[in-house]
Amino acid sequence: MKKLVFVLSVLLAIAGCTGSIKENGRESRAEILRERLLSGDTSSVFVVAHRGDWRFAPENSIAAIEHSIETGVDVVELDLQMTKDSVLIVMHDSKLDRTTTGKGKVQEWTLDSIRTLKLKNGCGIRTMHSVPTLEEAMLAAKGKVLVNLDKADRYFDLVMPVLEKTGTTRQVIMKGSRPASEVISFYGGYLDEVIYMPVVNLDKDNASELMTDYIKDLKPAAYELVYADGNKAELPLLMRTVLKDKALIWYNTLWDTLCGGHDDDMALEDPDAAYGYLIDTLGARIIQTDRAEYLLKYLRSRDLHE
Image (cartoon, rainbow, N blue to C red; front, side, top):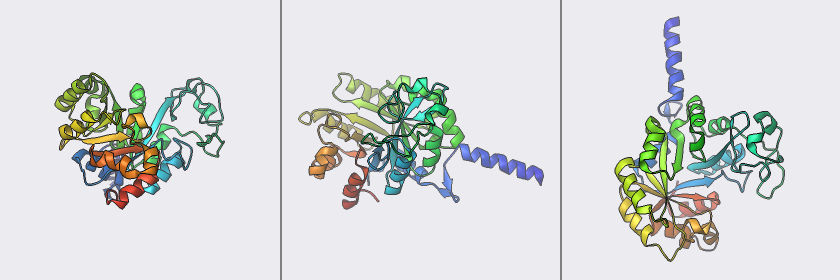
């Protein structure tokens, strides 16, 4: 009996670190979202909350992550920095000044010293919230939402043990602009677990070459596309045709030069001209935004989100 209990305990521990994340024996929301993304589901639009919902709570905070989940966001984008004692924390800037009550470079502070600081809100006002570690953030998101870890590949050797420890490897999206051959070499076998998404700036001369190699060698589930000038949409329009039935298209609406001017600010005046154009004309099925609740409301009005 004791031997059986031990074996079952080991199997449960392994299940917590690999395979699909389950809740009460059922697939978690995060696993369902992963399957939808990998299957190329175009019936709805994925909403990505940039740095969590930073209009509600401090950017990259646990509260921002939790509120994003509550509102129905599909992906939370988080940024990583490393402390002096080699602990990964969730923070965008390499310096503490803008987002915390501290000053100086993150890499010059230990985790214990950063624990004494408080996060600032979007207006630069001190809050009650503290800087989370990557482990804390992933536990907050576990099973509930996909997580795009930005600035993560430089810390890859530290990131993966945290994801494995928390059982959240399959929830993570990593992005980058490396050529396909480098992606395969760098990520290796982890490409079966972590979702890798190429970022292609369509304004760059090597865009077509990169896309050709990605399609041939990597076959990613989605691409983040970037273009600055709304009057030069020939290549974005072509990409919709090229990627049809092959991969989903991701656009950022954070500011105008990421999406040909069809950004969050335009959406406040005319959501059809901004979000609608990206969805209907350019084929976007993933949108990263600084106005997640506003975008969700728009998508739900069009039956493009649950």
